[in-house]
Length: 550
Image 1: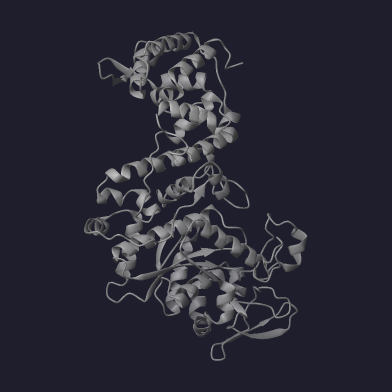
Image 2: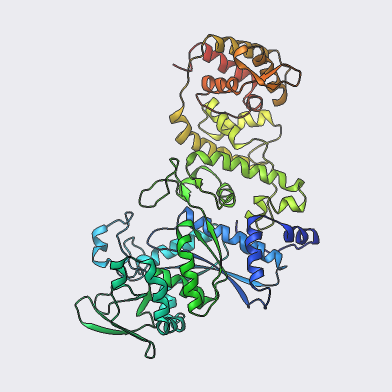
C-alpha cells in the first residue's frame, strides 16, 4: 500500500500539485520552503518514533502511513529529483518503568524494572535477545506487511555505536542552556533533582533518575551517586548515558538532521522544548505536523492500558487495509472516534473515492485520498455492490457463507462472479464476519403498529405490481409513492418532484426496524433490487404475521 514506486510526472500533474491544498502537499511545501535559500541535503530525512514498551498498534500505522503520504507529495513537488529516507526510530534504550499487561510472566520481568528495554530479557520466547528486540522485530514485520518503504533505527545501537556522541558532548558543553529550558517546565521538587542526563548504573544496569554532582564538558563526563551511594563518573558517550525523553527528542533531531516528523497532540506542548534543545545543539528543528488523537465511542482518549478503542488487528478482521488508510488520511487534525461502528462507512467511502478517481481532473485527483494512499497509482476496481448493501443483504438473508450472498449478487448483476470480481468476494467475507460479531447480537425486531401494517401491506402490493427486472430507481420511486399517501410519513418541509409533500425518513426507518431489526439501512430501492422483490415481499409477509419478532 505505501511503498514509493516510480512517479509518472506529467505536466498536468505537476501544475495541479503546485496548487494543491491537500494536507500532504501543504506539509511537503513546508519542507521545500525550508531549503528555499539553500541546496537540499543529499537526503531529506523523514522520521517517525516508536516506543517498544508495547507492540505496534493502530497509531503506529497511522503515523507511518501519513508520513509516507507527505514523503510522496514531496517527491512529486521536487519532480523526484531529491533523495528521501523514512527512518522509523525505536526508543529502545528507555527504561522499563512498569511491566506491560500483555506479557506472559510478569514475575519474570520484575527484577528488570528500570533497565533499558534493550537490556530486559525477552518474555515471549523465540530467538530474540531482549524485550526490545522482540518488539522491534514485530514493528518491522508490521511495517513490511503493509509494504512501507523505511529504514529501522535502534536508539541503543545509535547510542552505543557513537552516532550520538558528538551531540552528547555538545549537550555536556551546553548543559546550563539546556537546564535553563527544562527547569521552568518542572515543579519545585523535580527541579531539585533534575538532569537531562540519565546514567546507566554500571552495577545494576538500571536507568537512573539522579541529580548530577558534576558535569565536566571538557572531559565529556558526568558524576553522580549510584544507587548504593558510591560516587561514580561516566562518559556521556558510548551508550553509558542517555538523555531524558524531551532533550532526547531535540538531540536526535540535531544529530540526524531530521527534516520532518509528525506526532500526536499529546506532544504539542512539548514541541517548543524539543525545538529549543535542537537549536541549542546547533541544528535547525524539523518541520512538524501535529495530529489529533483517537477517541473511543464515548469520546474518551484511547489508551493501551485501558484497552478501549480498536486495535489494528480488530479493524483488519472486518475490513480491508485500504479502509483504514482512508480513515488515517481524512481530517488528521480533527479528533475522531475509533470504534467498530466507523468501519462500514470507511469501507464504502474508500470505494466511492476510488470509483470517482478516473473521472476527475488532476486538481480533484490530488485532493482525492486514494491518490495519496496509493502513491499516485490507485487501482481500478469495479464494485457493483457496496459494503453497506452487503451487510444488509447478510442481515436480511441470515447468510452464513459467501455462497448464499453470491446467489443474490449473481442474479442481480449478470456476469458478476467471485472470479470476475475478487474484491467483492473479499468484501463478502468481511461482511459476514462483521454481521456475525456486531450486527446479529444487536438486532431487535419490533412489531408494526396499525398504520405501519397498512403501509407495509400496501408496499408489498406495490412491489408485486412492478415489472420483472425492475431496477433500484424504479423500486425506490414505487416505495416513495406508497409513503406519500400516508399522512404519518408526509414531510411538508420537502416537496416531491411531482408536487405535494416529500417523504419523511421515518418511513424507511420503520422498514428497517420491522424487516431487518436495525435502526438504519441502505437505500431501500438498491437493497430490494439486490435482495429480490419476491424475497422482500416474503420478508414483509413474515413481519405482518409476527414471525420476525418471534
